[in-house]
Length: 254
Length: 254
DNA sequence: AGTACATTGCGTCATAATAACACATTTAAA
DNA sequence: TTTAAATGTGTTATTATGACGCAATGTACT
Image (cartoon, rainbow over all chains, first blue to last red; front, side, top):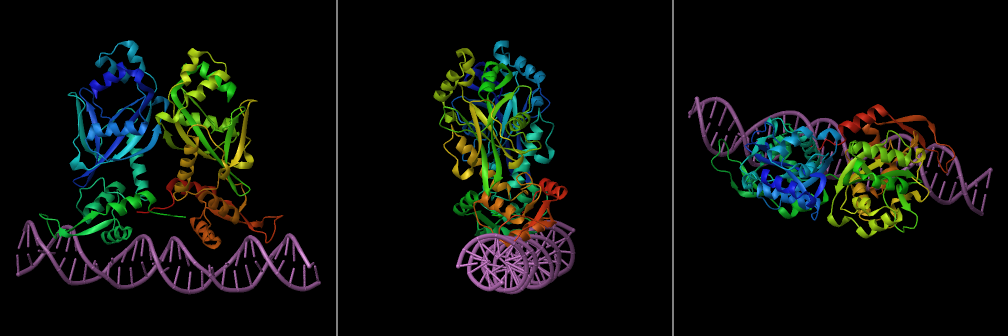
């Protein structure tokens, strides 16, 4: 992000002042829920991938752009979940160091040295189709198990936690998996996904029944190969029904 | 808001640029879900009560301030639900007229003539305890039945709709009523509240059972007086259990 | 005063959803 | 060949939900 950030700050008149976007990008691999995090060399703390909002772009569009840039994945599941605007969420000291590092003149640099409010988006992407892309040679971008997230800058940990909370709640309102699993998957895989997000064991048999009743999966006439123990059946999502349920919601409640 | 708005614009260096807060304030009265709306004299369209964010205030605090100013009610149920930031959500023409009306010099007025992103909050308040307070003599503030909301400025209708959608979804996740009903209420009243929000008829008997099972209401040894037909029993919320359920959520789902 | 009517209080019953668990089958590894 | 770990396919008990019945209460009308 370094070069690009410098560019933005030097042309800050084209960007929404005091407002940023931070993305919590979730992926699933090796039975782990992973989060895409960024680290700038020489900085001990990691951060969420984020960006700024061009004046001529809707905030949702800006978020999509950030996501595409970082993951190379299209048609991403992306949802705004909260906006963070505590006064103390900024770190003038840190920002000043960034400006120094980027060799930005003071008049331009002022733009960054204010309180920034940030809009949080979370995304669900297919781990294997994702190509994490650093925006320059000084940046590291990496999938990190959500259980082993290191120290993050500013309030990014709070943002991440809130994203996960939201995801957990929305698990009851919408189907999930289409964006996180490969096209063909097994029931134990889908269950692991749910268990990992919820941090809770579920009963195999009840899980199968519930998913089946939702009617979003199709059982394929094919088994997973090269696995230990009994080969599990493969399933795929019925995209049409999946989208329908996604639109109308799962639990009616009242 | 007029005088105050002028004040803010003229001292705009103390406020977060390009960012505002809009509040959808819900109340319940006469079996109607009402929304608190504002109209400035000479302007045919109504708007949501809103405000700006002082640089030294958290956005949540700013929202609370706006709400207290408008309703005089304390301990309000207030929740951020979404942030709106389409490019075209602003209306330069309208803003220019506001500036002219407020007699604000051009250099100061520029502050308002940019794209504003707005953070939406919705609130649930006790209709009878609320004293709608115009911020000056040119402003009208009124409770309006949500089914009869007139034309609103900018994207305020979209914001209102989204607030109601969110409220409907959150009805399945949390108890409601404590902030919208008087201390003592009848079951039909509570049911009407739910029916009005959901825009859907519910079965009396099933409703009673469900609410009772949640365990948030206490049946009082008292009946409502001065009513047509059979006098219904009065209930009150068990605040302790209510807060507990509010905190832990209603439906576990998975 | 008597009756009709709207509304409340307190049920029932059939069905669906959920939680807890049993058992046989498949496959790798011992 | 046996064992262990996983999968496929059930059952059963409990709880939640949806649809409805009926008597009691109090107003309003004749």
